[in-house]
Amino acid sequence: MNLTLYGHGDHWIAIDCGMMIRQDLPSAPLQVPNTRTLEELAIAPKALFITHGHEDHIGAVAWLWPKWQCPIYATPLAAGLLRHKFAEHSLSSAAIRVIEPGEALEEGPFTLRYLLMTHSIPESCAIMMQAGDHRVLHTGDWKLDPEPLIGACVDPSHFQALAPIDLLVGDSTNAPLPGSAGSEGAVAKALEQTLKECEGRVVVSCFASNLARVWAIGQAAARNGRRVSLMGRSMERMVSVARGLGYLDDFPALVPAQDLGYLPANEVVVIATGSQGEPRAALQRLAQRRHPFLDLEPGDTVIFSAKAIPGNERPIAALKKRLAQLGATLFDETNHPELHATGHPAQEEL
Image (cartoon, rainbow, N blue to C red; front, side, top):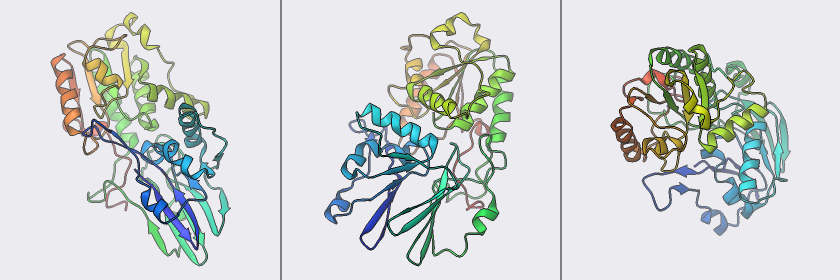
């Protein structure tokens, strides 16, 4: 749950404001940052800058922003997702201001520029900031992907030209791992080959915000003569917002979930939420035979195209056990690691 503050004199800004989902905390699975220290020190950000639209970077905005009432700057996709969240909380979205990658702006003593990075969601940006004599680069989330599917590759010369800087602020869940993160292009090829070998229905579960993966699944389905359906409110919302911004113009036509029963099993691919074992997500309802439009049968395949978030191992294991009891074939990061690539850099890229 990312929330970083920078201060110069008595002027403070915040970068990102995310939440964390912990299925091992059933009484309070949604966790947001504790701002008590800020309140004790009388620190309130004068502006909030969003690096990209993932939940661990925007998920707490609707919860914490009412304390601050400050302008929110975000690229078009993240801004669109934030407007949906504000509407759900009956908040006005007037404070949300769109900034394009590459643009610069000033906030008090800070000058900030958004710099495009490659990640598993479009419009991910690093933020280069200067305040007084200090130059700081806050990376956001990123990777070096030679074939990112959506968006351009990172141009190293753009970042080399920033030197000298005083401080680089970045993190990665893969910092302890050698090598590199892998390419979305390679995952797309593996998905296409895997679908070619599957006989029944195929359900692929991934994070709704991983638009590169969603696009790859749609293309793999089309090339194998399969129709695509979406399951899960967050998946439907993400695809709708992305299409409105022109990111999925060549995505296959979607089959409404209620019409799946009319299609032969070998012509169906479902992209579903629930890879982390969330109790109310689409994949959980399928595993419990509680989905109103589809029952999984022996011979169907479920692909987990996402990494297990630490803390979610037990609910994911229980979900997989239920799916196996239905006779579904399971592919995940342990037996088919080629079907997922992380969006975070390993040591070689760092």
